[in-house]
Length: 479
Image 1 (spheres, one colour):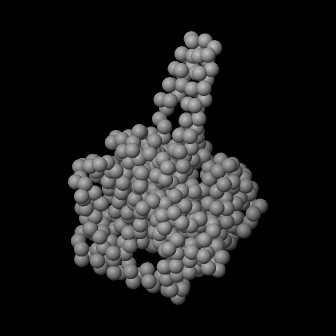
Image 2: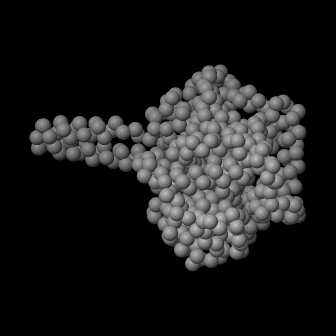
Image 3: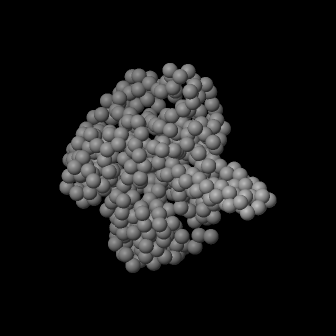
């Protein structure tokens, strides 16, 4: 049962709609108040951004009080810093600090999890390349989200050091390397041109920050493209730079968990074999019983794929949970070359403009924190993504799926995603603890923290997450 809600802000406020609830109101700077709220709660849900300004004390209070935490940030440089600073302590304490639980990046993150799970269980294979295509939607921008995005380059010096706010090309040499740098906060972060540059250039930016390794994926760029597997022209999508990093991070985290489970199982099997050998030396009957126990223990699925199947998408070595060299593309699906080219040109102009401090300041002035679309737009809002996964088989197949919601993506849908994440952490704790595929603590993504339990919650809440079919595909058209 949920006992009470709580709220915090950068300043005290009054919310008459919450008068009937037990709602302590405090500021983000009130360390004692935050500790009291976290100490009396199972889960803390945070929506007060920009998170790099106001989130540190909240996150630290949750960790100190061993309270699970979830937020809707898209500020991945801040998430990477948290992975370095709070990640090891949270993992040791079994506390889940879950970021990116709104429209960025639950649809992409849980969509990839669903497709990988289905391919593993139904086809016995992993995914080579997955596409998330934004096809339909209506919504508006949040002033807080605009400020968070605009603040990221300007706050890099505060987060990582003076060299961290370098221009967009500065970090490409480190980020595009297949082995290379130590990742966010480590050796080479500032010298390589900064976190903002690394985030833009490296799809594995967050995965590496969370202890994963890089594969062969590259950013899709700002050019229009025809995607044969999806059978559509596509243009750049604003959220790709966030969502793709989160998907790769989930792939890396789940692979780490699989590898840990495999090592534990191998150790248990080795101990069982030793026990069998010892028992055989003492007495044959006992040895046969021990051998049967060893065989029984070996029948537990070895977490070879995220869905529990024995698929080729095992995360051994430098691979991931979703596939041996899983790649992810997220774009806008556009009907033809002309439309895709126009959006591509606009995206290039917009990207260049956002690199200028005066443009970022103008955006923050145009949509200050607390502002957003009118109620009518929120009530009419919706979103839909098409999901396309190309398997890593010798003759690839194409698996198609869809996810969507009848609610405005930036407000009502995001609120429900965050709520369901919190409910999964609070009410499904036993189910999550019994699932060996999800992680028990650390700085995590929604898929790595809640797995398929969150997917089922979202479906029951009215979201659509569905695999719609599978078809063959000639190898030459697999990309």
